[in-house]
Length: 198
Image 1: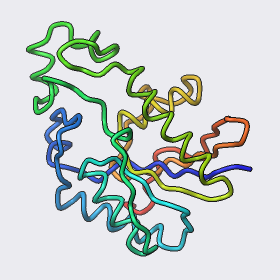
Image 2 (image 1 turned 120 degrees about the vertical axis):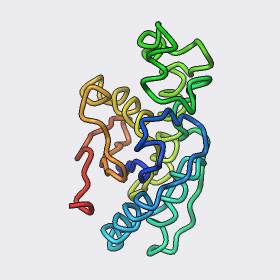
Image 3 (image 1 turned 120 degrees about the horizontal axis):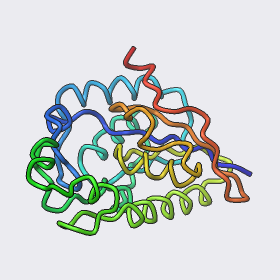
């Protein structure tokens, strides 16, 4: 038995465009982000989903609702799928963080200061919820709409470092397809695809 999982990064926000740290701030989709999500929904309308899940932050939830609409499925949200919490960095532009915090690189890697969540904590919550839902839907396909960094770090965890933030940045509304098998093994089928935006 296996479960197909479609991991989707949310559509664009204005803070994405400004290179501003969003973290767990509830920043809505931009007009372009809604357009991207609508195109993704059109692309996925003929696929079959057992369920559609999302982070409870509005940029992910709204993306998921647009994807779910043609399937007449509800979107179930979980805080475990939220982006990494960036503490006092949230709302700052990347350049501001680098200027104000000399140890920004070390804290980005490890967390634990300034309210920045540790990578291990983020990976743990995301991975455990993904595994729970994958086991629940053996034989089916589910979609999970979440955030770039937490998807990257989840992929890093389940592939032993083959995938992760060292790869190209996940595009807004990109799709990454995985298989979860009964023995607990994960396989990446495709990565960071955006055919609906071509």
